[in-house]
Image (cartoon, rainbow, N blue to C red; front, side, top):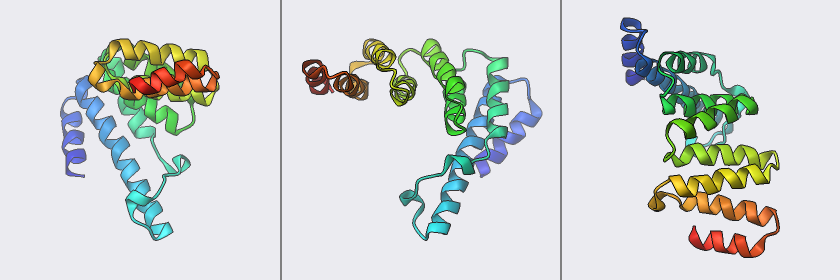
Length: 174
């Protein structure tokens, strides 16, 4: 909460700064997730770490708007694209989520989480060829020390395609 208040004050002083809008959107997104997790935990009489958030319970309009302002002010803010993709994914707008994760990869090709988020969407839609293309691209752009999750995704897609030898090879690399 103190960080959210500080960035909110910074946005009030300089609404023309894309980076401030990015961090404002990010703080709103994370605060809403924290609030939803705590509310869910109270309802289920569990610890916050033990619950799964119901995305329908999230109120992410303010976070989305701040992230959209950030991208409008500074289109190359890859983290704004990534978090906006997460917002769209949480509100079940997969097409816009995929667009934002794609922009994340374009603006910062070494960021593995952008690839993983896009791969997960493609796999959910059973777009295995697209998922494989993104995963393979990720393995070439992400430093090898950080690429194990991408190799795992390659293996999962190859397994779904019943290409067992290729799946085993990818899992071995993972």
